[in-house]
Amino acid sequence: MIDTHAHIFLSKMKPDDYVRSAMDAGVTGIINVAINLESAALSVELARNYSMVYATAGIHPCEGGEVNPIEQLRDFVNSYSIVAIGEIGLDGYRSPLSMEDQIVRFRSQLDLAREYNLPVIIHCREAANTMAEVIMDYPDIRKVYHCFSESDAFINAVDDENTMMSFTGNITYSNAENSRHAVKTLPFAKIMLETDSPYLVPTRFKGLPNQSAYIGEVASQVAELRGVSRDTVADVTTLNAIRFFGL
Image 1 (cartoon, one colour):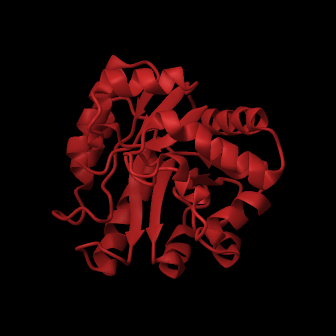
Image 2 (cartoon, one colour):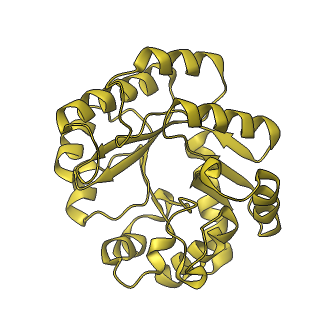
């Protein structure tokens, strides 16, 4: 299985312990998703040290500072090996930036992804309508909406042949109706698994910080919701991730 969205650099576990625990749980790959340039550097360092870890670079919509640090990000992409631009997107809940400034930052990073033929990892919180308006200009870019929890209407608005959705431990929560419905109804070829570690721990491990080793709980819930075996979920979503990220 591949954890397509984790933040190892935010975990309190030592990287050796984190990766070993994931390997023992059958995890074969971890996309270590940056939120700013500093964490992108940490992500690259971890990818150098662990062959199963892959780095990304991107500026999260909830990061303050310069609205459009695209030249610094371009320099980073030119200098290091990454598998995606992310985590990027729009946030109407807690971003310190205005939505107008967020859109400028988001578009510039989407343009960079297009320039380098890289997929993007998208954060969308309380910004669905605006997201749908912006993303319609980028049908050619491979994109995954992480921690997916939007409605059928949103799926219909943004879906294209390059669009994926990834699901976290929140699908084990009873109040995650949209996420659980999407797991049941999306084509299997559009689904990937993630932990968003150290956040959104599956119910079974409530009270503990999340980690990539718990991705099997997400797989098990997907299997239950879709009425298939966990092995089938692991096989299909792993292949989806390999194709999406070009691993």
